[in-house]
Amino acid sequence: MAIGTFLSDIETLRRKAREHIEQGPVTDSYGADRERVIAVLNEVLATEIVCVLRYKRHFYMATGLSSSAVAAEFLQHATDEQGHADMVAARIVQLQGEPNFNPEGLATRSHAEYKEGTSLTDMVREDLIAERVAVASYSEIIRWLEDGDPTTTQMIRTILTVEEEHADDMLNLLKGMD
Image 1 (cartoon, rainbow, N blue to C red):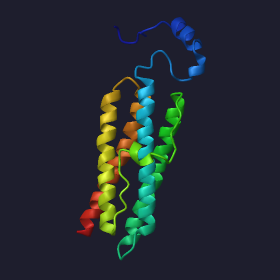
Image 2 (cartoon, one colour; image 1 turned 60 degrees about the vertical axis):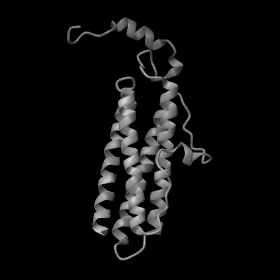
Image 3 (cartoon, rainbow, N blue to C red; image 1 turned 180 degrees about the horizontal axis):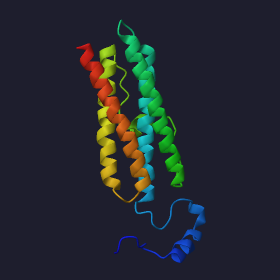
Image 4 (cartoon, one colour; image 1 turned 45 degrees about the vertical axis):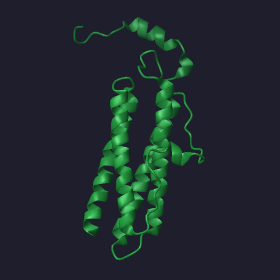
């Protein structure tokens, strides 16, 4: 195919855009299994919510001499994770799905575990583990989706970048505690 040519002519694109208008942004060109993508995104949503809850607990439970800087990091990460949850929920709705905020089963839908930790070091370690789970999981989702859903792929890439930063933050805190 020559550079600059479309797969379809403009009239065909316009006609197809009028068909199934109730599906909003989901068109015939959507190349993924929409129902499976929604299910996976609901797992991502659960993961982000569990991370918000864990970081919030760690923020409130952080005590000791070096706790104020660590607590501030916990709070920032909780805020970031909430933003991720909001992005994922909005994308689920765009795909004509329903975001699952039901607290029942939240921990089983989540890829990350909710581990409280008994000391500041334990909390940082558990957060690092959870971030590593998210990095591995979200990397796999990106490979799975490939070009089938470029919008969701880009959103997960954006979230993945922040999760990698969080893992690096937790690793640096952990190194400072040793």
